[in-house]
Length: 258
Ligand code: COA
Image 1: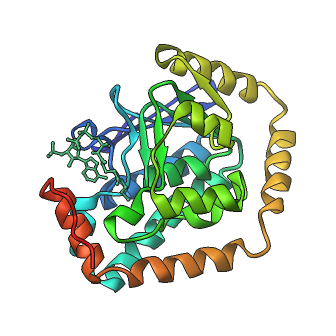
Image 2: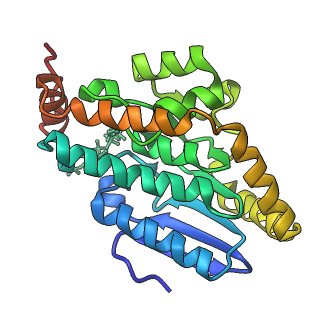
């Protein structure tokens, strides 16, 4: 049923699997990909999928982040629009009526980690590496990471991950509570498929109510936190360190920050 260039959507037995499919860019997500993801989630809801699985194509990456090549010359208003789109997609996973599972099959950096954070559950393969790595590009997490990470792993660990931009392997991520399970790489798809099938077999309305109630725990200041984050994130575009951090990545050299 796929109708998009950079993602695939398959719906079978009430489970929708959304695969980000840009392996030559390690599944980094650009505007077209985010827009497609939004449309695909709407389609999954319309088709009454009860569970959504998010994963990445190929053997190496879940989602290696927001597209740095696209971001490098953004102005603050353009960055604001990109942040809003990223937030819309993350929110769509968070508010999808049924459970969403991130099957983290490889790199999940920056925006990729944030999309995983917006899912209800996270399962990582032994090959997975996760991180909010934005600091080394001269920016901060901008798709909900500063808010959702702290809520999931606690304030101290979130600060460490965001300040240092540390890249953590699946086992460490599990110990931090960043992922719920770690499984052998070649067993990830089957493991997540079983999990999704178990969830799809649960009473639909009860499961949806459970999710809605659990989401309520995170209410309160989240919206203002997310608005604050969007403002801050986009204000960094145009700074020397943002330009330099992204240019250095694109040119494959070490950045020289101010
Ligand atoms: N945006 C755009 N392109 C990206 C990307 C991103 N977030 N992550 C990887 N790519 C591209 C690379 O530029 C490279 O393109 P090229 O073949 O045209 O040179 C291709 O994907 C493969 O990546 P490469 O760096 O060569 O692979 P690697 O195995 O040596 O390293 C990573 C993989 C994930 C460790 C490394 O690509 C990386 O650190 N990516 C950036 C992660 C990041 O900071 N994400 C946060 C963004 S908000």
